Image (cartoon, rainbow, N blue to C red; front, side, top):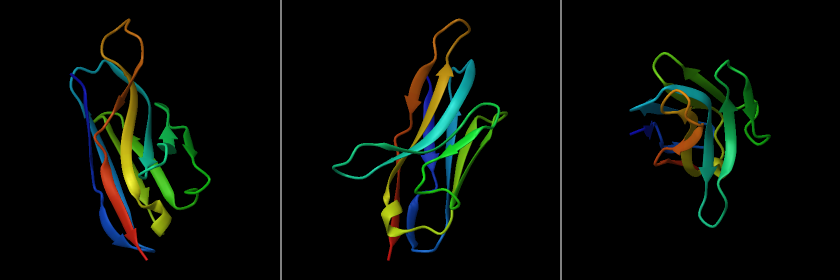
Length: 121
């Protein structure tokens, strides 16, 4: 069974920083693209940043220049460094991974349980 576990969320003042981590564990054959999404109550989950297995990165326009995504392939970890945080960054942040659980199996999406980030003004 595959698990994605996020950590690092919390309460921070505007202008502050947080670093989110996501640990992938379980029966994993290979991990492809990974990413961070966020969701606020009443709105759809939206992509924040993504990174492919060879390091290509994409960011939502709202976080470009403030957030940085990285991964440690050897340890199956995903990170999101969030700087210059704004109140509008407040959301539950979810880790996503596209992975195979065995050779020859199709790629499937897996999600973490989410971690709350609250930015006070």
